[in-house]
Amino acid sequence: MKIYIDGNYYDEASAKISVFDHGLLYGDGIFEGIRIYNGRVFKLKEHIDRLFYSAKAILLTIPMGHAELMKTVVDTCRENKLQEGYIRLVVTRGVGGLGLNPNKCKKPSIIVIADKIQLYPVEHYERGLDIITVPTVRNLHSALNPAIKSLNYLNNILAKIEANNGGCEEAVMLNSEGYVSECTGDNIFILKGGKMFTPPLAAGALYGITRGVVIELAEAEGIKVTEPNLTRYDLFNADECFLTGTGAELIPVVKIDGRVIGEGKPGPVTRKLVSLYHSLTKVSGEPIYP
Ligand code: PXG
Image (tube, rainbow, N blue to C red; front, side, top):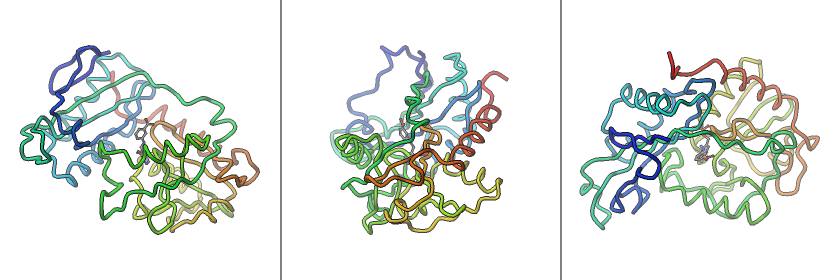
C-alpha cells in the first residue's frame, strides 16, 4: 500500500508522522471517509467541500486548493490500483510544541490512505441491526459542533463502547435536550405512514453525505422527507428504521432498546432504497482511470 503524506508516497511501514503533531497530541485536525466503487471515487466533491467547511470552522488552512486535493485523492487511489475501497483523508494541525497553542504549528499535514474495504458482515444487512440508546449524549453544538468532522471522536467512541457493552453494534445518541441526534458513525432515518423522517442537523448530527444522497433518492421516488426533532418514542413506533453512512451505506435497524421496529425485519422502503443506492454507486463518481 502507498500512503500519501505531504507530497510523497510511503510504504505502510514508513508512513509516519511526528509525535509532536497536534493531530495526535490534541485531536486537532479533521478528516473524511470516502468510498471507491467500480473504479470511481463516490461523491468526492461533496467530501472535499465538507473537509473545507470543517477546516474553516476550526481555523485550519488546508495547504492545497479544492481541485488539487481532489486530484491528490484520485492519484493516491490510482497509485494503489484500487477498483473498490475506502479512503481516509486526514488533515492535522501539524507539528507544534507541547502546548495547546495552534499558532506554533506552522504547517498542517495532509494524509491520504486508500485501502481495500472491510465490509460489515452480510447478516447485519439481511437481518437488520439491534441498537440501543446510550448514556453519553452528543456533543453540544455550542461546545464542539458535531458538524465538524474533527479528529476528536471521543464522544462517538464512548457511545460506541457503551453500545458494545450492551451487546450492540451501534448506539442511538441523544442530544442534551433528549432528542435523537444520530448514531456513532451513521445518520438515522425512520419511516412512518409512508413518510420519511430524519433528525435535523441542528439536533447534533454530522451533515452526512450518504444522508443527503438517500434524501434525494427517496424524494425522486415520491417519498416525502422531513427533518423534525425526533424522540425515542418516534423511533420505537416507526414502521421502518435504517442508518446511513459512507462505511455502512444503508443498514436496516429492526430493534431499538428492546422494542421491535415494524415487522422486525428490513422493511420494503429500506430495501428499495438500498437497491437504488447500490445502482447509483456503480455508475457515479470521479473516475480513477479515465
Ligand atoms: N455521523 C457521524 C458521527 C459520522 O462519523 C456519519 C454520520 C455518516 O456520514 P457520511 O458522510 O459518511 O454519510 C459519519 C461518518 C467508519 C467511520 O470507519 C465512519 C464514519 C466516520 C468515521 C469512521 O465506519 N462515518
